[in-house]
Amino acid sequence: MHLPIVGLAKPILHGYFRSSCSWRVRIAFALKGIEYEQVPVNLIKDGGQQLTDQYKALNPMQQVPAVEIDGITLSQSLAVIQYIDETRQGPKLLPACPKKRAQVRMICDIIASGIQPLQNLYVIQKIGADKVPWAQHFIQRGFQALEPILKETAGTYCVGDELSMADICIVPQVYNAERFKVNVGQYPTIDRLNQTLVEIEAFKLSHPSCQPDTPADLRA
Image (cartoon, rainbow, N blue to C red; front, side, top):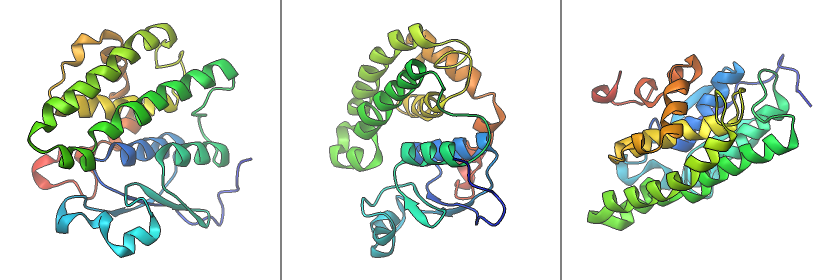
């Protein structure tokens, strides 16, 4: 059911410029043409602003993003994306076909459950000096699984020829892979899809290099 836009307050995204999960939500908002406000939560400054009591009251997991929307607060990126897909007009982010919809969710879960959490900031800080080989291991393990799956499902985009939530997930994960010096060229389907997606305006607008909290030395 789509909610009427008139009278609805702008969603508020509490996030961090380089957070994969925050970036996913920014992409979804951009694809849907949804105006929103951003409240930066610096994951580094002051020991991590996500660890404050104030933020914990908003998101008990003390992670980003947290999105205030329609009188509720949602704190997982895929839940946010599916909520706005179900309540807002614009291009659908989940296919109508049950088989394709399941494939989109499978790809998203591989990334959001099987790769990204193992190389996010909280985990990397616990690993310490071995953080780069640790991150490389789990990204490559995940990409080795994703590559043959995407080879079967992909058309122009991750699942067929329509943009979906899977595309929203893959671009931030490739960005992380490159940050940790993973050779994405080893995975030709992933590499091709990423190169196509990063040229789309919604992905450009949501990129970490051009957010309100992007440090000056990292701005595009």
